[in-house]
Image (cartoon, rainbow, N blue to C red; front, side):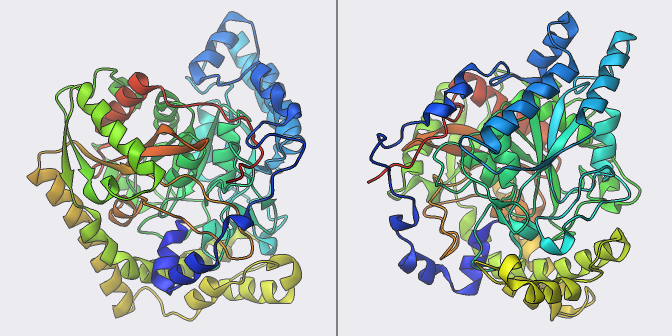
Length: 543
């Protein structure tokens, strides 16, 4: 969940601005030049699977150079060396005790002439708010759910297993998907501690899919899965130099995923390339009888999203650019201006549009929607989860009873505010949902239609600020997650460059079920620009 929403709607923005300082970042050590990578981290350059794509891994398995077991072992060793030692990213909560067993099964199938598809034998990390019916707990990072093991796989996990993927482990996240406190710190959970940004270690990885983003970027897995309500896939993807897809709500099932919002939640791929994101999206998408909104994808779902990857896909396209993102002194603005000129050079027409002037005022209504839907969704999840806590009220009570461990840095104002609300039959809820959802859809649909646009672009996020466990998140500069999140429309982010050693993503947004069009644009931009740079786990810069 994007923390900017809460800063804006809780009146804390001015407080955050006044209390934030670079002092929140760790001081540079005397022994090292600012920004230099750890000596121990040079292993990153020689890692056998460094920046390996799904196709690369399939070629290695197909030729016999590597097996799924061998690949899985390499990633497990990498997690031990990079995540739990060395830079100590803390992006992976647990590795799957069954991972090697699954890999062996996939190797045996391959030996017998059966290859299920492009994900056969491929190790995948999964955000820890997604049920896996195995030895791994599903906790949402909360101590109240520590040790809770799901009895059934989430629907998308079933699809992953059917595709032959190896569930490598579960990733850390902003606790309760960053829907606990108005002063929370992205990437921190009571279960997993603080995830670090793999580019500069005292910078935020963003969230709430912090672990999935940091792990995929640091080459701890082939690909990863996150979840988003507003910004939780695209923002950490931007901050970790990844491709992230927030699909149309309803393209992927939410069954078995600890919820925030029935109207905005979705899982999504977090990968190092657009092609890998398209492969993973193809495997995850599909209707689920237990999630009625997925029935709306009938006739719009694509079996293979890779067929829309066209290196010349920008030629002749009309693209809108968010006008407010072209002004200001933030370093990301210069990168966007360069990207606009680059898109034009690739044959696209780019025109200025104003989306956020219409959608930003809807933020208060969106926040009300999430508060109502969170209580309803969490109570329904916990009622059948078999967890020690059965209701949101139980979670709140647990945190109070264990506050030294559960709430050492920030409190649970959002949980408490949600608990006080009525059900989804409340007139206030219905009015807020209509305002935020219909208003954002009207704004995007009209701008896309009136300007004959394939998509609208903007800055996904400004460069990652410092981790600040005292004051909470502070995000200087623009972001573009809100319009598509409120509308339930697709959003893809692709690396568009670096500022002071930190990645910044370029967002592509379009109408419902327009993932094919967005993938075409994103792939063409990626292939021509080549802005992805692997992280080096650098020590902090000093100003």
